[in-house]
Image (tube, rainbow, N blue to C red; front, side, top):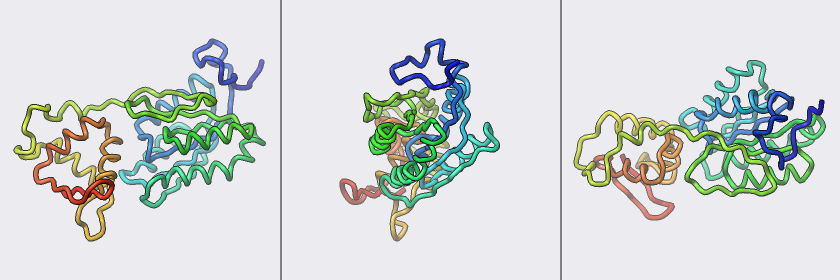
Length: 252
């Protein structure tokens, strides 16, 4: 019996994949890019479809909203003896990406020596590029991320595992385009989401609000697509916008 994983040209749904491939997996998670809500889908895919065992996990993120902690808890709940490296990074653009790249580089020799399969959970083009380089060095490497409307830098040289889309229950509670949400008092949904945003985002110096880019990323992690984010922000009474472009600050 050949225990090696199939080549990337092999279909994942083929009969020879399920129940035959036994692999040791080194998992790398971009917690600022992929929600902990998809952790169970990742684990189910590795265990049930690839018959794989996760032996190490590196999770990087700024941990706003406890994203890193939630990922770690979900992974350890399935693999209690799992070696987890939690990397809490400064709140800056591509901070988690850089941390993952450094960790992957440091562990590459071990992955090659132990013939570990590297599975990177992220859709960022910088991380996907690093995955391609790891494969070029001879390391078995896969990419996994949740299906989304957001364009992704797809790579023809890498196998991509598309995870099920995350449900968006909050979107249904948002006012429609014809409504006048800004004139209404905030309901429970708006109030609760604002509380989550305050916990996930860092206030700008002086406590004068939150960077619009941070708020957008946080709403995306909560399941809001582009249109839903715009509707939600329009529904926040008293919302003040300061600055322009990437320097826009939202006060709420």
